[in-house]
Each structure stands twice: as structure tokens, then as C-alpha cells.
Image (cartoon, rainbow, N blue to C red; front, side):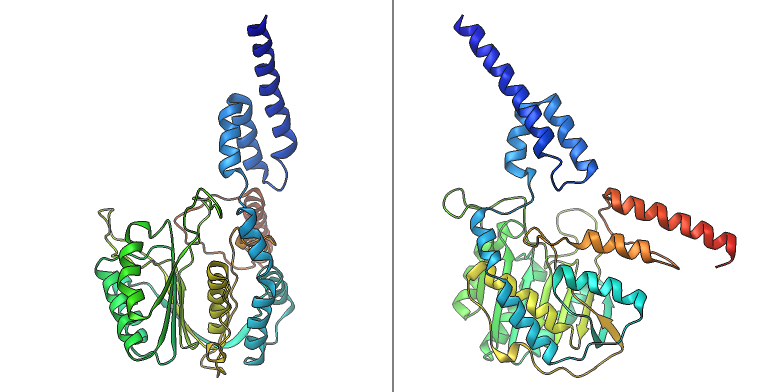
Length: 355
């Protein structure tokens, strides 16, 4: 009799998991993701439950969310400094909607007067970065998902050591998972030379636990608040570990938008250290050095107000001439696919009418 009772309890628990999934899984999740999760719950409910508890919700643990909740004033003070140092541009109505969306998600304003250089040569990007670090006078800030100790990493670290020896304040953030195998050597080399190094979200199973799958993939460099780098390239040899070279795209920017990259770094530094970087030298008065409009949109699980996907959808829906997408990962959401279909219909209509 006891054996039958346990069988009935197990069956009831299995169906309770399945029925609970029908209520919980669809909440704030795309139809495609919902369908995949529900299929797994009905085929293997106990496996699905374990996976869902581990990675099912793209949110950080409570302690991290509480710290993010304290970030608002830090970001607002940074943005206030940026807007005091720059003049916002006048926009056409078609441009204003996308700009407003970006500001609504990431808080950063659109700024004019920037010079933007696209960098596609892997080694030349490192050469330019080393040269800019060697020319730094006040501060150098770096944030990378992967930072290695190979030839490329050695060149960047050597430049940081030289800058610190000149009295330049150097700060480095590296992701604890992406840079795991090199992190100890990086800290051991740089900290004794006065360079502040912190690992982003170090893996812990007790106390302030962290998620191994929710990482900081940003690549940002800010030098003297006047030169910025961002894009897809990490600090690692192009040929590392794969047998073929990586091809990456970076941008080197000058002008008011560098302050927005600085604000992103300041925010991430606060999240890892609970220390607000508030030196006035971080946001120097900016002159117009080019003709490009630029606006920074930070994204990730720390931000609850949407992300880059919403922007892609809006831009595709508003496109009138062309859409160019360059990405190694293309896993489109349903709204993005709908935007693609709408764009195709618009293109067909334009072809038929001569628009």
C-alpha cells in the first residue's frame, strides 16, 4: 500500500510541475521560448524543473538586483555631467522615435559632434589601443569579457603598467568566467603596480551567489574621457584556440559620446565594487571633433526596461531603404521576424509603386 501511495504522489507531483509550467513559463517570455520550455516540461518535467530553476529566468540573484536598484542616482549624475558638456542635436521626426526608444531603455541621450572610426583589422586595433594608452594623461578604463595573458594581453598589460608608472589612474574589469583561466595571473601582475583590477561576478555557491550563464560581455575602453573603444573584439590573440583567426569589428570614437561609454563603465564599476567614480576629470568638456551622431545603449540582464532586441525591431520596422545585419549569432525573436516580413512587404510595395 505504501508503494502505491508513493507512486500516486510522484504522479501528482509530475502533473503539478506540468500544470505549474503552463502558468509560470509564458510570463514575460517570447512565444518561441515558451513553446520550447513547455515541450521540455511535458516530455521530461523533472529535468525541465531543474534547468528552469538554474537558468530559466534571465535575472541575477536578489543581492545583485538590490545593488542594481541603487544604481539609478549614479547613472543620473553621470548623464547630468555628459549633458552639461554637450549640446543635443536637432532631429527629424523619423529619427526622433528611435532616439527616444534608446533613451527610454538606456537613459543615454543622442549627442552630435563625434568622430567615429570603424576598425576591422584585428592587430591594427590592438596597435591603436596600445598607442592611445601610451598617450594617456589622467585615466584609463578597460572592461572586457575575455582578457588573456597571451601576446595580445601582454601588450595591453605592459601599456597599463607604463601608464601607471606615469601616474595615470588605471582600472580594469574582467568577466570572472570569460577570463577565468587568466584572471589570477592578471591580478598578480597588475595590482602590485597600482592598477585596480576586479573580476565581474565571481562564481560563488554561498553568500552572494552568482549565475554562471549571466555574464558581462561588454568590451569598452575609455582613455582620458576623450577616446573610447567598443565593439566585439576581446583582448586575446586572433588565432587563439580555434585554428582560424577571429574577425571582429570595433569602433574608436572621440567627442561627447565618449562620456556615455564612461558612464557605462562607471555603472559597472559601481556594481562590482559599490564605489562610485565621481572625479570631475572623468567627464571633460568636449569639443565637436566630427559630424557623427552617436548614442550608447547598454543592455543585459541588469536592465529590466528592455534591450537591444526592441531597438532592432523598431529600426527594421522604420527602415525605408535598406537593412544591413552583421552578426555571428542570429536567433531572431518573433517580433524581429515580423519586422522582417513587414520590411519585405514594404520593399515589394516600393518596387511596385516606384518608391
